[in-house]
Length: 215
Image (cartoon, rainbow, N blue to C red; front, side, top):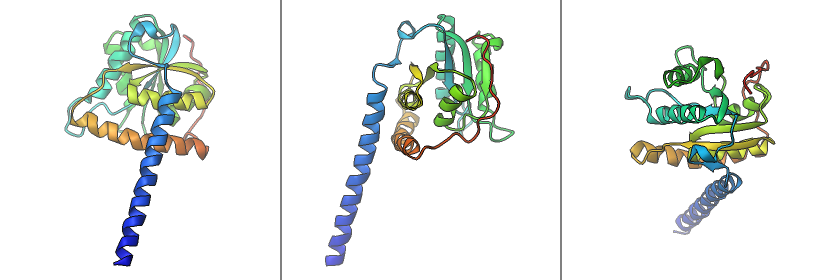
């Protein structure tokens, strides 16, 4: 019986520590991005380069991913409102048959964004990679990030840690089961983001610099 009580006590302490880390990471990222994540184009600073964060074009069931669609629409809206001078689409292209950046470019072009102002980042494997590469590869010290609000907050946090002037424009979010699962994963992603900063995590690849002529 004493052994069982000890296990219960340890489980309670472990659970408390986990909840504390989750809450602390969430609060830190929310506060660091406060006032820098916008919901209307009028609030966004004009003529910065946009950084659109990648996600898969299709879900596992074959349907178009609404997170993808809403991000591309938000980026196109900002461009047509005169708020973006160019757009970096940053996504995962770690496999030949999987190319988020090209999918993003194609949808933006379909939404009326000129192909000439779109720059592809094929090594945006994680949010950290996308943000850091926008500075170290694409030469941007001030960016407007485009994703959903929860993701924008984490990206702005990372950008500020790396000394960038960052703001973000939030695309439409989801309130269904998919949205709930994504928001739960975000809590864990925020802990990982804080750990990455504390452990000086670097992007998987950097590579040659890219000159953005429209910046």
